[in-house]
Image (cartoon, rainbow, N blue to C red):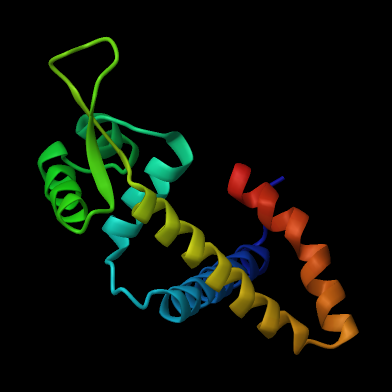
Length: 147
């Protein structure tokens, strides 16, 4: 049975509000935890390398949905900053892997701590009913992210 127009309009409003709220929260987290002024592409590349380990430029570019040349520019900048380093590919001598340096891993760790601390302080300001609402919404938000 098709959804009514008012039901569709309500869903569109909910989607718009959810996107705006999540976007605002993410921007706030970034602003609270980005003292080094890295751009989103650099932060995303660092996160991927932290989560997945050393990767080729092409593999990283594919995961980030960008051109290898663009990723090469990002990695060159991060390499100059001492946050990533080149490594030999274990099976293909023609390829180069990029991995986090200890400094790059430490920056990722510090950013994670700063995000959690800021969010912990913000959540601590909620009353019990608001905290319960947030806790009840977490499984739904996870399910949306996995769909």
